[in-house]
Length: 135
Figure (cartoon, helix red, strand yellow):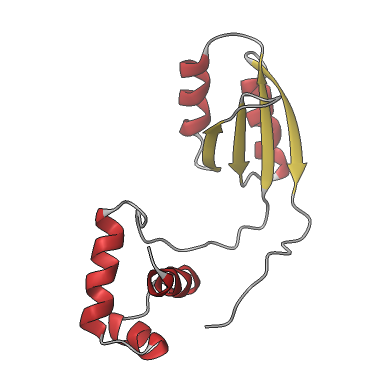
């Protein structure tokens, strides 16, 4: 991956709906050349899919500390909740890190459901301080 590929990835991260032509105008390439590079990035697995970012009213980071070795059952349960955006098996102190978007009521229900397998720690986002770049 070279610096042009990195520029394309940065632009797509900011707005994946831009046409290849618009991206090309930003980096001084033709739309066809940009399209070819995007295809190669997809073939290499650097671009897995295109998506949108939803501005959720609530976001939690939930660390899971398993008390039982029933990992498959826990993963199935966690993935059955539409409010769970991501389930990562991690190394370190915890076993899993979840990114969730529960209301206070539904978070309580989720915590009660997972409590039979694990202890947990919940960090709730109070402000998103991620650097944003204008396109």
